Length: 224
Ligand code: TYD
Image (cartoon, rainbow, N blue to C red):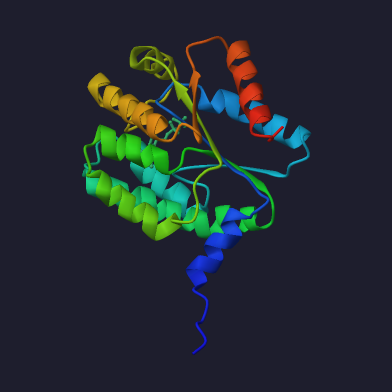
């Protein structure tokens, strides 16, 4: 009897051999992701890569609507499980509509936050069981991990004072310092268990030294 190939296995093989790279940026509020994203994109483009810049939650029309609900409605009560499911609902749309197609076309996807944020914020911050996050990850993108993740790390108080200096404070930014301590710790745990993929950047350093580290890490990975 001929065994028919499993479509998920075929997908996994394609994703592992893809030319396009998937790079994500992570960190607590005020860590400087948005400052460094255009710099990273410029380096990748200079190296001849076609780069798509995107973000989570968001990146699609529906995802941006979900983002508004999650971030802008400060007084809206959303429990941890619901928050997690909304993050993954936006992610499902983003994966199918943007990330997978771009990677399949050999483009490099530079994404401001991805599933590590769910582990850090919903898992670490809100205390949602890690197994629930793992099951959603397995369901939606078992075959896809970022090739490289920059974790911009800095003390919570420094990050929050930077973020609070901005005009608008969103639903997450209104959380207590202890929430962000848990988020930061969860991020550092993730980096410890995935040292090859997740590279910690000291985000307290000045912009020039952070940029130097970024160039070094991209070169090390043959990405620029
Ligand atoms: P952020 O990336 O900090 O955007 P800005 O720089 O515009 O403030 O905002 C996104 C927020 O969403 C951030 O507080 C973290 C949160 N988030 C989660 O809690 N879980 C997730 O899975 C993702 C992707 C984001």
